Length: 519
Ligand code: NAD
Image: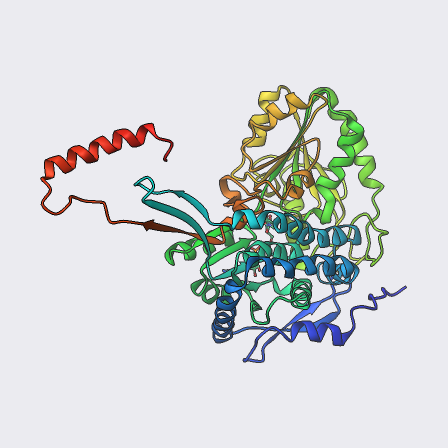
């Protein structure tokens, strides 16, 4: 039976969404439904002049927005929070159509901006409040730390969580008084466009949140050259290009990049939970989660039992194209990406790895489906042994000692996420703290760390610079202004004062300051 597209995705609705993307050249990109390869909508492509105009509009809107009282800015997000929940099913339809992921993952993605709004609605008043500190001269001077918005923030988002990365990362920036110019991936521009329309429905001023579309290398330079800050999520290789350009322009950037994330199972782990976790870790979002697991390390004593149970559970997974909650796993994002995943598996097999299950494309299901795949015998001379595959492919490894497991987990240029499973949580935490990784989840794969919106989350090593969430997830979008007040001009020697006397007084004053509570 032919796949029925959700009723919400009418041509008028889709045309309405893309109408906001500026394109004076008239060029467009064919945005397709991943499950079928059918055209969904022609996505306008922005020229450098379009991008410059988008910045000019954003900058004008930002000046007014920054002058709004914080309470009124936050009220927009209180309304948006309700709207995002009310319209979660439509957002899910869009995410599925443009990314090919299964519905369970798509609806979970819709929760992310809502959680981020909820966190910063509570935290923003504290973070953005001016902080009065003592000045150098007690009683006569003050210094106040003021958080000024940076101006216009460029957000460059990937296709794997287009709604979450496109919208969630803008929320704290907007609350802090910035404007946004977002560049989503061409493949997945629809759900962030819908998110922006909901924000405007909630009262976000028109013009404040701009979207430009195009291939990264075409639009990237103009986009970065006009920004006051860049928030980038994507691959490590693109992150390097973005970071170099931001550095040359002397603007800040946050780079959230790729991973080759390890999972370590300790002797005393509960295998029922481990197998369930491993299924999500390897195959959730069809293996296209930056924090997902591509390397699993098992103790010799439990390896065979885990392998057999994990393979059986994997073979029981259902894969398919459906806009309902049926399939356990959906499609990869595109035939091109499927070829990359297939190349990693073929390369591993050619160099001696064994496929325990899966390993093949499934053109019978759609143009970009690939089976959940478990490999054994993967080594560092294989693509899948060192670089991110970003698909439903995982390698199993044995270890003899915990020290060896930690060394193997750290034997990578990446450091985004790690997962450690053990019955004794304190021991598992000790192991976790030895892993060079920005996020470490104990007895979970990734959700506990990522959903903890109060704690910064980012990568180390080649997995990134900076973090999202937590206080720094908002403060990074601000400049600190040190507003210093001197009530009476008392610094320096008085007219006619002998300089030795002045210096003696100054040095005595320094001694006294050391003893007071003034910092
Ligand atoms: P990508 O780097 O190819 O593209 C990401 C975005 O950058 C896209 O919008 C793309 O059009 C744009 N882009 C590409 N070249 C550009 C350039 N020269 N200038 C400006 N923009 C440019 O990554 P991808 O394939 O879309 O996404 C998958 C990658 O993202 C994986 O490596 C994954 O691990 C990573 N990722 C990381 C996180 C995280 O939080 N650390 C989250 C999601 C995805």
